[in-house]
Image (cartoon, rainbow, N blue to C red):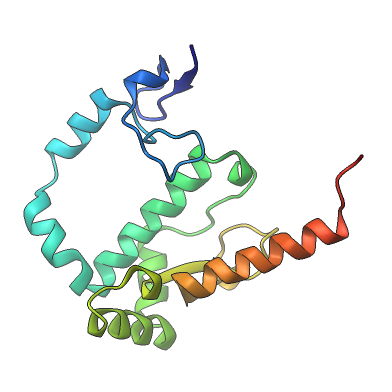
Length: 160
């Protein structure tokens, strides 16, 4: 039986105590079912689902949460640091013409996922710092990540 640590309650639990999430590396949601129920109770989800996309600052706040979660949960991000506060990140984004343009285009395109604004680290070996991030569409960021991984793999072939 496989186990996973819930970062919310910090208990080591069997994977069956987590909801299935195919996009996660380990195949399960990032917090256990129990914590997820508590976490979800405090959210006005119906209002949240309809309004959060329209407000650029709220979307940035969610992106900030995603960065923090990625650093805590994903092994490949464990050595990365978050060097700005939520408010600094929101202020940075709200003063970035590129982010505001991307957000507006995304809304006009009926919030197509591949066009959603995404946070990209300019130097992938660097931390999350305001001078090391830029806003791209999700599809541009995905392509950039694929190209970076391919270049790294070619430069560092596996041992045979």
